[in-house]
Image (cartoon, rainbow, N blue to C red; front, side, top):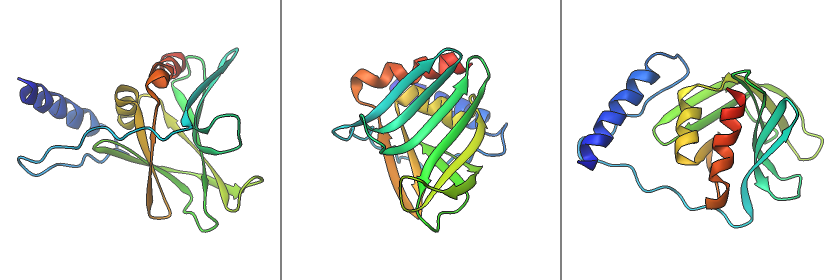
Length: 169
């Protein structure tokens, strides 16, 4: 029964991904399944902030300048502003993945005031399939400089992801 549900959900996801140009579904070989969700990193989490008609969801170390990935939006806008820190030679893009969906967003790059490297910003639709998958599973991956960084919500913070996307519309 569970396998049937997963196959149906995978089919629906692939169908939705086919409607957009930034999504690339990754097909698994027959009989291969994805691994369990990654474990959260101690002291790192997704933090949700709301100020009037604006909201922010950021992954990093609490009460620090350690920002790894951030999303900002206006209430009901349906649009996200993405931000990330890259190395000095980072490509001007934000490349993210949630389970089997990936998306690359062209980014503006400027020297970081806090770190060696660059500060990247990009814009995206909040309903892009990779964000909807993140919303469902509670973790997302950022690819930078050929390295994969997985950002997993602590169990008590998972509802903040839903709050953020519900706010953004």
